[in-house]
Length: 295
Image (cartoon, rainbow, N blue to C red):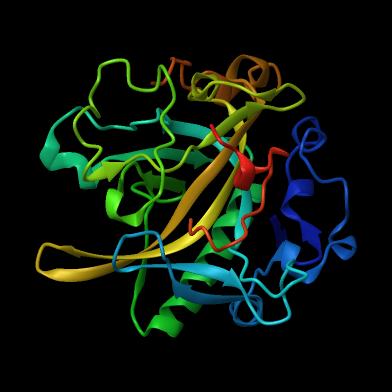
């Protein structure tokens, strides 16, 4: 797991103490291995990561791996970059089927998504945005193209993950009892499967249902960094996509209200219930062994 920095400081320490004390690393930047710190410069990115095709059954997709000697792997296996970002939930849909509503023609566009903002605490959030811009610049140079941001609103960080994977990939379905109460995925098994789970939990409590993540909560998100090329309008467009794997609620919207500056509290959103490749090692932020999870 890799953490964002700003100069000699971890971004974790730039959040208010009432938030940072609940975050999952107690180490200082100098205590972390080089792979565990996301560079905050363009030059640093070139030493830190490499871009490789993503072998998960979808064309025109690549992913970032830890590069060269900069890897947590002891046996030389490629390790997919996994970063931790923090922020206030602006919008969310982490249901197993995401925004899929049953229309067969929309299967390939079905996604789970999450958008974060900095709210009153812009210094820490902007440091994450800066590092992501460096990452886009580096990837664009490697792929010799302009890499766009997946965020729909400037100044936010957007995560999303395609719900369905082609059944031809051979990956098993990860749907559990209760994941599809309307039977929307019935009949898709021969062509498409839901081959992953976005794990959700609450700090100090462990795993919890996806409904525990609501608009206005302060969360930590573990995500892979993928590069997606798609045809839009009359041209190809390349985007840096943060593919969320785990979301941990650090402080709920109601708890956060006690600390929020008065002028921001008056504008805070009202909480409402919201509805990788097998050969690559992936790291975890919630303390769960994702690779061996049979759910």
